[in-house]
Image 1 (cartoon, rainbow, N blue to C red):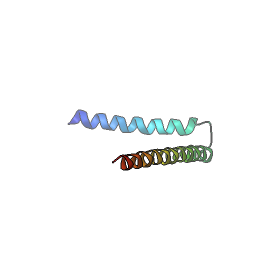
Image 2: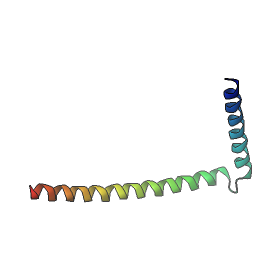
Image 3: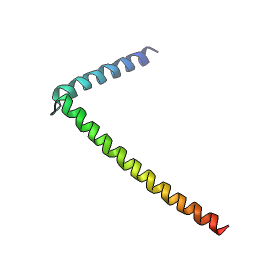
Image 4: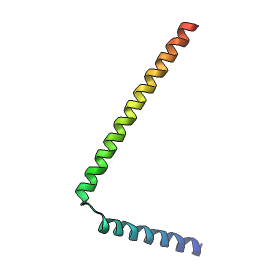
Length: 70
């Protein structure tokens, strides 16, 4: 149990040190970084919605062809 506690404590300290280092060494300000992340997420969401619409149309067309064949 002692090794497990030491491992998780080390992981937590390492994660905190990494977060601090990334924050201090980031090339952009926090606002710029959040804006960039938000723009990328919006683009990804739009791509996902487009892919879902296309797949739905494909499946609906396939369903109709199965219904007509029966």
